[in-house]
Image (cartoon, rainbow, N blue to C red):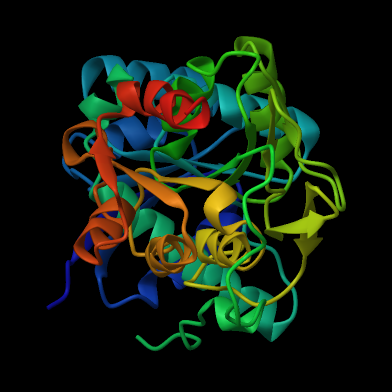
Amino acid sequence: MSLNLKVLVVDDSAVVRQALHAILSSDPDIGEIVTAQDPFAAAEKLKTFVPDVITLDVEMPRMDGITFLKKLMEQHPLPVIMCSSLTETNSETAMKALEYGAVDLIQKPRLGTKTFLEESRVMICDVVKAAAKTNVRKLRKIHEVQPKLTADAILPPPKSLAMLQTTEKIVLVGASTGGTEAIRVFLEGMPRNCPGIVIVQHMPENFTRSFAERLDGLCAISVKEAENMEAVLPGHALIAPGNKHLLVKRSGAKYIVEIKDGPLVSRHRPSVDVLFRSGARYVGKNAIAVIMTGMGDDGAKGMAELKQAGSYNIAQDEASCVVFGMPKVAIDLGAAHKVLPLEAISRHVMSMYVQ
Protein backbone atom coordinates (compact mmCIF):
# COMPACT_ATOMS: atom_id res chain seq x y z
CA MET A 1 0.00 0.00 0.00
CA SER A 2 1.47 3.36 -1.08
CA LEU A 3 2.18 5.96 1.60
CA ASN A 4 1.24 8.76 -0.84
CA LEU A 5 3.62 11.21 0.84
CA LYS A 6 3.53 14.92 0.03
CA VAL A 7 6.88 16.69 -0.44
CA LEU A 8 7.79 20.36 -0.83
CA VAL A 9 11.13 20.92 -2.61
CA VAL A 10 12.71 24.34 -1.91
CA ASP A 11 15.77 25.19 -3.99
CA ASP A 12 16.83 28.22 -6.04
CA SER A 13 18.25 25.99 -8.80
CA ALA A 14 15.69 24.93 -11.41
CA VAL A 15 17.96 22.03 -12.37
CA VAL A 16 18.04 20.72 -8.80
CA ARG A 17 14.28 21.17 -8.41
CA GLN A 18 13.70 19.19 -11.60
CA ALA A 19 16.17 16.47 -10.58
CA LEU A 20 14.66 16.05 -7.12
CA HIS A 21 11.15 16.04 -8.60
CA ALA A 22 12.15 13.25 -11.01
CA ILE A 23 13.90 11.23 -8.27
CA LEU A 24 11.03 11.50 -5.80
CA SER A 25 8.38 10.84 -8.47
CA SER A 26 10.02 7.48 -9.19
CA ASP A 27 9.05 6.15 -5.75
CA PRO A 28 5.51 4.76 -5.49
CA ASP A 29 5.31 5.80 -1.82
CA ILE A 30 5.74 9.47 -2.75
CA GLY A 31 2.69 11.18 -4.21
CA GLU A 32 2.35 14.92 -4.67
CA ILE A 33 5.54 16.96 -5.11
CA VAL A 34 5.45 20.77 -5.09
CA THR A 35 8.49 22.96 -5.76
CA ALA A 36 9.46 26.49 -4.72
CA GLN A 37 12.44 28.60 -5.77
CA ASP A 38 13.04 30.24 -2.37
CA PRO A 39 11.63 30.47 1.19
CA PHE A 40 9.23 33.27 0.29
CA ALA A 41 7.68 31.19 -2.48
CA ALA A 42 7.66 28.21 -0.10
CA ALA A 43 5.76 30.22 2.52
CA GLU A 44 3.09 31.01 -0.07
CA LYS A 45 2.84 27.33 -1.03
CA LEU A 46 2.46 26.33 2.63
CA LYS A 47 -0.72 28.40 2.89
CA THR A 48 -2.57 25.81 0.80
CA PHE A 49 -0.23 22.79 0.73
CA VAL A 50 0.75 20.87 3.87
CA PRO A 51 3.66 18.55 3.07
CA ASP A 52 4.78 15.51 5.01
CA VAL A 53 8.41 16.47 4.32
CA ILE A 54 10.29 19.55 3.09
CA THR A 55 13.66 19.40 1.33
CA LEU A 56 15.41 22.71 1.89
CA ASP A 57 18.45 24.17 0.14
CA VAL A 58 21.13 25.61 2.41
CA GLU A 59 22.07 28.66 0.34
CA MET A 60 19.36 30.72 -1.41
CA PRO A 61 18.84 34.39 -2.31
CA ARG A 62 16.57 36.67 -0.26
CA MET A 63 16.53 34.22 2.69
CA ASP A 64 18.93 31.37 3.45
CA GLY A 65 17.74 27.91 4.40
CA ILE A 66 18.85 28.17 8.02
CA THR A 67 16.80 31.31 8.66
CA PHE A 68 13.75 29.75 7.04
CA LEU A 69 14.25 26.55 9.06
CA LYS A 70 14.30 28.53 12.32
CA LYS A 71 11.09 30.36 11.42
CA LEU A 72 9.39 27.15 10.32
CA MET A 73 10.29 25.26 13.49
CA GLU A 74 9.02 28.11 15.64
CA GLN A 75 5.73 28.56 13.80
CA HIS A 76 4.83 25.27 12.13
CA PRO A 77 7.26 22.38 12.82
CA LEU A 78 7.52 19.91 9.93
CA PRO A 79 10.14 17.28 9.02
CA VAL A 80 12.83 19.14 7.09
CA ILE A 81 15.75 17.62 5.16
CA MET A 82 18.63 19.95 4.33
CA CYS A 83 19.84 19.65 0.75
CA SER A 84 23.41 20.85 0.23
CA SER A 85 26.20 20.80 -2.32
CA LEU A 86 29.57 19.31 -1.45
CA THR A 87 31.44 22.31 -0.06
CA GLU A 88 33.09 22.69 3.33
CA THR A 89 31.08 25.83 4.13
CA ASN A 90 27.78 24.21 3.18
CA SER A 91 28.64 21.10 5.19
CA GLU A 92 29.27 23.15 8.33
CA THR A 93 26.06 25.14 7.79
CA ALA A 94 24.06 21.98 7.21
CA MET A 95 25.40 20.56 10.48
CA LYS A 96 24.19 23.70 12.22
CA ALA A 97 20.76 23.05 10.69
CA LEU A 98 20.59 19.71 12.51
CA GLU A 99 20.92 21.60 15.79
CA TYR A 100 17.95 23.75 14.77
CA GLY A 101 15.68 20.78 14.11
CA ALA A 102 16.41 19.46 10.62
CA VAL A 103 15.83 15.71 10.44
CA ASP A 104 18.55 14.70 8.00
CA LEU A 105 20.92 15.72 5.21
CA ILE A 106 21.09 14.86 1.52
CA GLN A 107 23.51 15.86 -1.20
CA LYS A 108 22.25 17.77 -4.18
CA PRO A 109 21.84 15.23 -7.00
CA ARG A 110 24.61 15.36 -9.59
CA LEU A 111 24.98 13.90 -13.05
CA GLY A 112 27.10 10.77 -13.12
CA THR A 113 27.10 7.10 -14.00
CA LYS A 114 23.91 5.08 -14.06
CA THR A 115 24.97 3.31 -10.85
CA PHE A 116 25.66 6.63 -9.11
CA LEU A 117 22.29 8.05 -10.10
CA GLU A 118 20.45 4.91 -9.01
CA GLU A 119 22.23 4.84 -5.64
CA SER A 120 21.41 8.54 -5.16
CA ARG A 121 17.78 7.83 -5.96
CA VAL A 122 17.60 4.99 -3.46
CA MET A 123 19.24 7.00 -0.66
CA ILE A 124 17.31 10.23 -1.27
CA CYS A 125 13.92 8.47 -1.40
CA ASP A 126 14.73 6.48 1.74
CA VAL A 127 15.75 9.63 3.63
CA VAL A 128 12.50 11.36 2.64
CA LYS A 129 10.38 8.37 3.72
CA ALA A 130 12.29 8.13 7.00
CA ALA A 131 11.80 11.85 7.62
CA ALA A 132 8.05 11.46 7.16
CA LYS A 133 8.01 9.03 10.10
CA THR A 134 9.96 11.24 12.48
CA ASN A 135 8.59 12.92 15.55
CA VAL A 136 9.87 16.47 14.96
CA ARG A 137 9.00 17.64 18.45
CA LYS A 138 10.91 14.72 19.96
CA LEU A 139 13.87 15.50 17.71
CA ARG A 140 13.88 19.09 18.79
CA LYS A 141 13.91 17.90 22.42
CA ILE A 142 17.09 16.13 22.57
CA HIS A 143 9.29 0.75 -7.70
CA GLU A 144 12.04 -1.37 -8.28
CA VAL A 145 15.51 -0.65 -7.03
CA GLN A 146 18.83 -2.40 -6.85
CA PRO A 147 18.80 -5.64 -4.84
CA LYS A 148 19.07 -5.00 -1.12
CA LEU A 149 22.56 -6.33 -0.47
CA THR A 150 23.74 -7.76 2.82
CA ALA A 151 27.14 -7.40 4.48
CA ASP A 152 28.25 -10.39 2.36
CA ALA A 153 28.93 -7.85 -0.40
CA ILE A 154 31.77 -6.35 1.66
CA LEU A 155 32.91 -9.04 4.11
CA PRO A 156 32.17 -12.79 4.28
CA PRO A 157 30.52 -14.18 7.44
CA PRO A 158 32.94 -15.17 10.23
CA LYS A 159 33.99 -18.82 10.02
CA SER A 160 34.99 -18.93 13.66
CA LEU A 161 34.68 -16.80 16.77
CA ALA A 162 36.95 -13.79 17.12
CA MET A 163 40.12 -14.03 19.16
CA LEU A 164 39.58 -14.34 22.90
CA GLN A 165 39.15 -11.25 25.02
CA THR A 166 42.14 -8.94 25.32
CA THR A 167 42.85 -6.11 27.72
CA GLU A 168 40.59 -3.62 25.91
CA LYS A 169 36.97 -3.64 24.83
CA ILE A 170 35.70 -1.42 22.02
CA VAL A 171 32.25 0.04 21.37
CA LEU A 172 30.53 -0.26 17.97
CA VAL A 173 27.66 2.16 17.31
CA GLY A 174 25.15 2.36 14.47
CA ALA A 175 22.49 5.03 13.85
CA SER A 176 20.47 6.68 11.10
CA THR A 177 17.58 9.19 11.16
CA GLY A 178 17.81 11.22 14.37
CA GLY A 179 21.21 9.71 15.05
CA THR A 180 23.25 12.89 14.89
CA GLU A 181 21.69 14.16 18.10
CA ALA A 182 21.50 10.68 19.67
CA ILE A 183 25.22 10.19 19.09
CA ARG A 184 25.91 13.63 20.56
CA VAL A 185 24.04 12.70 23.75
CA PHE A 186 25.82 9.34 23.90
CA LEU A 187 29.32 10.75 23.39
CA GLU A 188 28.79 13.69 25.75
CA GLY A 189 28.11 11.11 28.44
CA MET A 190 31.44 9.36 27.83
CA PRO A 191 34.38 10.09 30.19
CA ARG A 192 37.98 10.33 29.01
CA ASN A 193 38.70 6.80 30.24
CA CYS A 194 36.02 5.22 28.05
CA PRO A 195 36.78 2.42 25.58
CA GLY A 196 37.55 3.20 21.96
CA ILE A 197 34.38 3.87 19.96
CA VAL A 198 33.68 3.26 16.27
CA ILE A 199 30.54 4.80 14.77
CA VAL A 200 28.51 4.44 11.58
CA GLN A 201 25.98 7.24 11.13
CA HIS A 202 24.13 7.29 7.82
CA MET A 203 25.33 10.58 6.33
CA PRO A 204 26.53 11.87 2.93
CA GLU A 205 30.23 12.29 2.18
CA ASN A 206 31.93 15.53 3.29
CA PHE A 207 29.37 16.03 6.07
CA THR A 208 30.91 13.56 8.50
CA ARG A 209 34.06 15.62 9.01
CA SER A 210 32.03 18.66 10.10
CA PHE A 211 29.89 16.36 12.26
CA ALA A 212 32.96 14.91 13.96
CA GLU A 213 34.53 18.34 14.48
CA ARG A 214 31.32 19.62 16.05
CA LEU A 215 31.25 16.67 18.47
CA ASP A 216 34.95 17.00 19.25
CA GLY A 217 34.26 20.51 20.53
CA LEU A 218 31.37 19.34 22.71
CA CYS A 219 32.69 16.11 24.24
CA ALA A 220 35.34 15.28 26.81
CA ILE A 221 36.68 12.56 24.52
CA SER A 222 38.38 13.03 21.15
CA VAL A 223 36.06 12.66 18.13
CA LYS A 224 37.20 12.59 14.50
CA GLU A 225 36.36 11.25 11.06
CA ALA A 226 38.05 7.87 10.69
CA GLU A 227 41.08 7.40 8.46
CA ASN A 228 42.11 4.13 6.85
CA MET A 229 44.17 1.87 9.14
CA GLU A 230 43.72 4.24 12.10
CA ALA A 231 43.99 2.67 15.56
CA VAL A 232 40.94 2.43 17.83
CA LEU A 233 42.10 3.98 21.10
CA PRO A 234 40.55 4.49 24.55
CA GLY A 235 39.03 7.93 24.95
CA HIS A 236 38.62 8.34 21.19
CA ALA A 237 35.63 7.99 18.85
CA LEU A 238 36.02 7.41 15.11
CA ILE A 239 33.14 8.19 12.74
CA ALA A 240 32.79 6.49 9.35
CA PRO A 241 33.39 8.87 6.42
CA GLY A 242 30.22 9.50 4.43
CA ASN A 243 29.79 7.28 1.36
CA LYS A 244 32.43 4.80 2.60
CA HIS A 245 32.03 1.53 4.47
CA LEU A 246 33.89 1.23 7.78
CA LEU A 247 35.21 -2.05 9.19
CA VAL A 248 37.08 -2.79 12.38
CA LYS A 249 39.91 -5.34 12.26
CA ARG A 250 42.48 -6.91 14.56
CA SER A 251 46.13 -5.82 14.39
CA GLY A 252 48.07 -7.76 16.98
CA ALA A 253 46.57 -6.93 20.37
CA LYS A 254 44.97 -3.74 19.04
CA TYR A 255 42.12 -2.82 16.72
CA ILE A 256 42.24 -0.67 13.61
CA VAL A 257 39.61 0.57 11.18
CA GLU A 258 39.51 -0.04 7.45
CA ILE A 259 37.77 2.31 5.01
CA LYS A 260 36.32 0.60 1.94
CA ASP A 261 34.35 1.38 -1.18
CA GLY A 262 31.65 -1.02 -2.30
CA PRO A 263 27.95 -1.26 -3.11
CA LEU A 264 25.11 -0.11 -0.89
CA VAL A 265 24.56 -2.63 1.89
CA SER A 266 21.10 -2.70 3.48
CA ARG A 267 20.55 0.32 1.18
CA HIS A 268 23.31 2.32 2.84
CA ARG A 269 26.97 3.26 2.53
CA PRO A 270 28.32 3.36 5.18
CA SER A 271 26.34 0.42 6.51
CA VAL A 272 25.93 -0.55 10.15
CA ASP A 273 25.64 -4.20 9.09
CA VAL A 274 29.15 -4.01 7.58
CA LEU A 275 30.62 -2.54 10.78
CA PHE A 276 28.82 -5.07 12.97
CA ARG A 277 29.77 -7.98 10.70
CA SER A 278 33.43 -6.98 10.99
CA GLY A 279 32.98 -6.78 14.76
CA ALA A 280 31.57 -10.30 14.85
CA ARG A 281 34.51 -11.53 12.81
CA TYR A 282 37.39 -9.71 14.51
CA VAL A 283 36.22 -8.40 17.91
CA GLY A 284 33.71 -10.88 19.35
CA LYS A 285 33.64 -10.86 23.16
CA ASN A 286 35.59 -7.61 23.23
CA ALA A 287 32.70 -5.74 21.60
CA ILE A 288 29.93 -3.68 23.15
CA ALA A 289 27.46 -2.84 20.37
CA VAL A 290 24.83 -0.08 20.37
CA ILE A 291 22.06 0.37 17.81
CA MET A 292 20.22 3.69 17.82
CA THR A 293 17.36 5.54 16.19
CA GLY A 294 16.82 5.06 12.46
CA MET A 295 14.41 3.80 9.84
CA GLY A 296 14.79 0.38 8.26
CA ASP A 297 16.78 -2.61 9.46
CA ASP A 298 20.44 -1.78 8.81
CA GLY A 299 22.51 -3.18 11.67
CA ALA A 300 19.92 -5.64 13.02
CA LYS A 301 21.36 -8.74 11.34
CA GLY A 302 24.87 -7.59 12.12
CA MET A 303 23.95 -7.19 15.77
CA ALA A 304 22.58 -10.74 15.80
CA GLU A 305 25.92 -11.94 14.41
CA LEU A 306 27.74 -9.97 17.08
CA LYS A 307 25.65 -11.57 19.80
CA GLN A 308 26.45 -15.02 18.45
CA ALA A 309 30.15 -14.07 18.53
CA GLY A 310 29.90 -13.12 22.21
CA SER A 311 29.42 -9.34 22.21
CA TYR A 312 27.19 -7.41 24.60
CA ASN A 313 24.46 -5.53 22.74
CA ILE A 314 22.30 -2.50 23.61
CA ALA A 315 19.31 -1.12 21.69
CA GLN A 316 17.80 2.35 22.16
CA ASP A 317 14.22 2.20 23.41
CA GLU A 318 11.16 3.36 21.47
CA ALA A 319 10.34 6.32 23.71
CA SER A 320 13.68 8.03 23.08
CA CYS A 321 14.01 7.16 19.36
CA VAL A 322 13.13 9.67 16.67
CA VAL A 323 12.39 6.67 14.41
CA PHE A 324 12.01 3.29 16.11
CA GLY A 325 13.07 1.20 13.12
CA MET A 326 16.59 -0.22 13.33
CA PRO A 327 16.48 -0.84 17.11
CA LYS A 328 13.04 -2.48 16.85
CA VAL A 329 14.20 -4.96 14.22
CA ALA A 330 17.27 -5.80 16.32
CA ILE A 331 15.10 -6.30 19.40
CA ASP A 332 12.63 -8.45 17.46
CA LEU A 333 15.53 -10.62 16.28
CA GLY A 334 16.57 -11.17 19.89
CA ALA A 335 19.90 -9.47 19.18
CA ALA A 336 19.84 -7.00 22.08
CA HIS A 337 20.78 -7.92 25.64
CA LYS A 338 19.45 -4.62 26.98
CA VAL A 339 16.94 -2.00 25.79
CA LEU A 340 17.59 1.43 27.29
CA PRO A 341 16.56 5.09 26.94
CA LEU A 342 19.16 7.20 25.15
CA GLU A 343 20.29 9.05 28.28
CA ALA A 344 21.15 5.78 30.05
CA ILE A 345 23.20 4.11 27.32
CA SER A 346 26.59 5.73 27.95
CA ARG A 347 26.42 4.96 31.69
CA HIS A 348 25.52 1.36 30.99
CA VAL A 349 28.34 0.99 28.47
CA MET A 350 30.81 2.23 31.07
CA SER A 351 29.40 -0.16 33.69
CA MET A 352 30.00 -3.07 31.31
CA TYR A 353 33.46 -1.76 30.39
CA VAL A 354 34.78 -1.64 33.95
CA GLN A 355 33.50 -5.08 34.94
